[in-house]
Image (cartoon, rainbow, N blue to C red):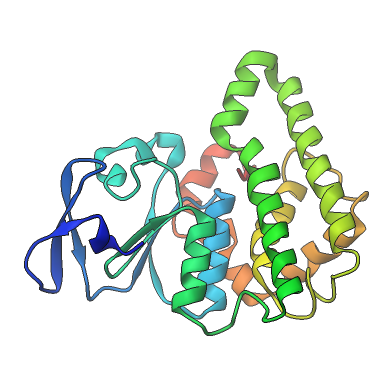
Length: 256
């Protein structure tokens, strides 16, 4: 949906002052600026969008949103995404949140390095893999969910929750991809499935002491992804908000 279909904007110029009815306030958008990405380095949905931007060779401005300090709930950010989640982007007159929506938007607007194959069957598998990651794995181990689970059942119960849901998702992905994988998840080119898989399997292998030996295909993909420059550049430790926050975690790198 185009921004001007639900924003009422003032006179045309390089700076638009737009009224957002969902939050009943005005925001200003610089129509001449490059893409702005609202991101938190430890967030795997943000990691996906960074990979997509890098694969397409798109320059962007990194706008850090510190989730642990609850910056996502501040009025200025809620003007960008009233739901208060990351990632979000501003691209000219488009304001968009949700990693799936953002990735598909980038695919439509910026055709370089296609993230979807032309073959319908292979395209459908890419959609399925991305949805398994986003809906059946990552959504169940989001930070608010984990904090709630830990509050109710403690640290050990939280780890059991994570292992149960991740193991179920990873087992399904192993079966689904065995007849489609090449160098990457669905062949020898990086597509949407890889954009969603890479943050999840790289992150979880380094978090919660998650054992990956039962998932040989995903383990192989994880090592392959780590050699891809677009994925390397998107790694949490390579983001501008990494260092000052990372130090607070006693050297532990967390993803959610």
